[in-house]
Every structure is written in structure tokens, then in C-alpha cells.
Length: 97
Length: 200
Image 1 (cartoon, each protein chain N blue to C red):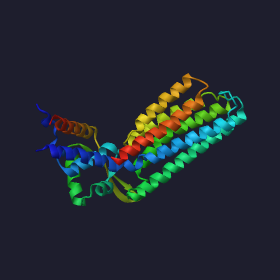
Image 2 (image 1 turned 90 degrees about the vertical axis):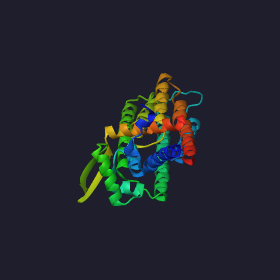
Image 3 (image 1 turned 30 degrees about the vertical axis):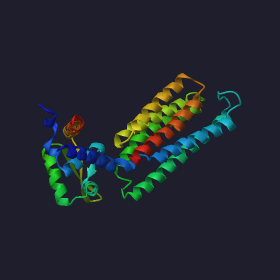
Image 4 (image 1 turned 120 degrees about the horizontal axis):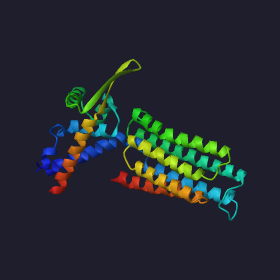
């Protein structure tokens, strides 16, 4: 088994990589903040969030703030571990070459 | 062939982590300013309120004057940090009062206020001796506790403050000097490191 096996296909995309990076250092982030940081459209962001959610890498919290619906996201323990492994694999690949 | 892509991924990750949390981390200048205030405050205390020759503070009136100076240092440092951070956030168009900031402040204040109240209680019963040590220890704990909500090296600054505080407790009588080191010199070193990192 090589290092390359630790490269997670799911993170092999700019937006999903970005979402996970943000959720690694912020306990949670809401939809509009993610959108603003990643500079993507609603639909695009929503579909990538869905993918990560399906993998159980992020958790979704829906609530009302001043009667307005607000959706925020949090990385799960599993997601954080997977992302950490991915970063380590990237670093290993870079230093190997 | 993939080398470039991996490198880009890593730098994207770093940039995104930075951008999404940087505004809540104290800027280098706030640290340096806080360090300078602390040293000036300590100098004022040393030359005006410390009984000549001795390092033990038994005269309570002078001691309270010194406490006022310390409180002044704290207020000035916090004001400077708030002003610098707010301006930086406005410049980078990032909201300053979001839930991460609230959590950061809450987690910072719980150990800090606990320590502050504890010190005040001890002071009212004439336990002056460990004030500097307790300030350093609780400040360090506050930093370590808050560091989960920000990037950067705040955690390590916190560890250093705790160690300095403990050493301070082990060497009674030299409180002022440990205080100058912990709050003055360490903040200036920390601020300078942050400045260098921000430039990269």
C-alpha cells in the first residue's frame, strides 16, 4: 500500500477541499459564510456540502435566527480524521519527490 | 506531474484556514503594543512605587498604586487589540462579531475572569505575594483555552505564560521581573513572530 492510497478522492476538488479546510479551524460555519469565503454559487456549494454530508464528514445544523432559517455546518470527528490523513498524504507525496 | 497539484492543494488549504480564522487572531502589532505597555507600566511601577532597594512590596498603598498601573496596562492593551482587529476586519471585509469570535471570547474570559476574581479575593485578605504568578498562570490558561478557536501560535504563548507563572511562584520576591518577562518581552516576541508570518 503506497502513500497514494491515502489521497482521498473526495477532497480532490477545490470546493470540497475548501469547505473542509474552513471547518477544520472553525467549530462551525454557516452557509453564507462558506459561500463568501469560497466565492461559489448557492447551487454549487449546496451540492458539494451534500456530498460531504453523505460521507458523514460534516454535520448539518438547521435553526432559526431571528425567525430566519440558518444552516450551519460542522466537521465530524470522522471528517477531521479523513482530512488530516489527506493532508499528511499530500505532504508525504511532496517531500518524496 | 501531480507534484504541482499537491503543492497547490496544500497552499489552498493553508490559505483557506488562514482566511477563515485570521481576523480573530490577534495581529502582530497588538502583541507588540501590549508588550510595550507592560514594560512601560512595570517601569512606572518600579521607579515610582517600589520602595527603593527592596523587591518585596509590603507597603499596601504603593501596592494598590501598582495595581492601578497594571489595570491601566490591561485596559490599554485590550483597547489597542480591539481597534487594530476591528480595522483589519473592516479592511478585509470580514464580519468581526460572528459565532467564532463569541466562542473565542467566552473561552478566553472564563479562565481569565476566574483568575482575576480569585486574585482580588486574595488581595482583600492581604495575600499579595502570588499576584504576578497567578496573573501569568491564569492568562496562560485563558490563551490555551481560547486557542482552539483561532489559528496561529497563541497556544504556545499560553504554555510559556503558564511556565513563567509557575517559575514566578517558585521564586518569590521577583514577581515584577517575571511579570515583565511574561507580559512584556513574551508579547513583543510573539507579536514579532506573528508579523513575520503575516508577511509570508
